[in-house]
Image (cartoon, rainbow, N blue to C red):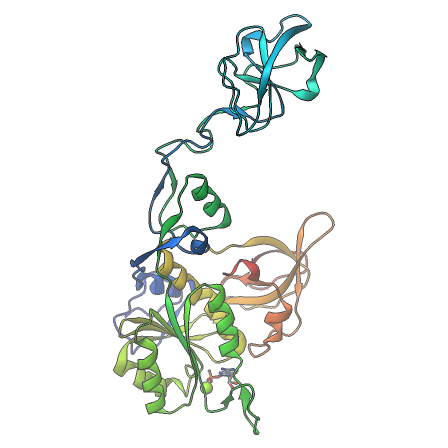
Length: 423
Ligand code: AMP
Ligand code: MG
């Protein structure tokens, strides 16, 4: 068993050992244990928005299907462009999108053409209407400032027939629905969504709507988790609050693992409670108890419960969110799509001093804003404790301070991860 803070390969052979891992090593160990979902289903095009494409989309047609005008103007043969000051051409008809000009255009002739209309036979160039003078309703005068072939969209210039347009694993965005519609597809094959069960553990937890006695707190984690999971577009099974009681926990773990791909819990993995949860989990699956060199969110439990992946997140409300975003979200992404998760980050300038010891990865909550000169500055949300959930609510990004960083001065360059990109 390796027990190291910097290695990138992690053995999962001995779940008993308390391994300390870097954030990167933990994420890699998690991803190495995931088999992406293979089951597919066919959906109507609109229902596929946000879903993971399961098939290669090959174009059965050229898009655009015919060479057409990019402008309102006059279609001519490029060879008719004047070499001298101007040339007068005979106007022989009109081409409108959906109403093509069906005859041929011969040398010395032109056709009035609207945007999107197919180019009449014999033409290959469009002169914008603003750049011609009408001599009368049968003759058009064209100047010399033109280029043969201008303002024409070639058939297949967007998508050529037989070309691969979309590849499996892509999360379908609005433009993808439009692209598939432009090819005439009414249905598409997508991956089944991950099914995720989640619950909170703790004797002190109460559900909203119940009165609080001394020492009790409302279960807020299940709401943050719900929000993050909902955004991740998974099928949800909310199993509520489970007491710190071996039998109740065992039952909850088994119910959660049944027919789900992934189980997430919060609480019960900190020192003291860990031993207790550990015993139950180890009876049910192959579970690893990690200390991660990070703040917030040091303890993390990861493994397999029957056929489900299992994440036991810390109980502290900020730690839950940080560990979800750094570990569960990449896992869900890979599970759903089979493609690597690439975190979206931005460079910014820190507007404040941040004290930090080297050795662990810190996720500071910040407020990112754009300055008048276009640069990005990140400022403090104030209190940063792992129980201060309002820091996540006030903030709009994590300031990422990797292990070697030994603090930040006001004006220093930092890397931020916007919450809005965490989906
Ligand atoms: P634990 O990891 O169970 O030791 O919990 C650490 C801290 O987080 C304690 O202060 C708990 O009361 C708090 N906590 C645990 N679970 C929740 C929850 N679901 N909602 C709000 N606070 C929680
Ligand atoms: Mg607890």
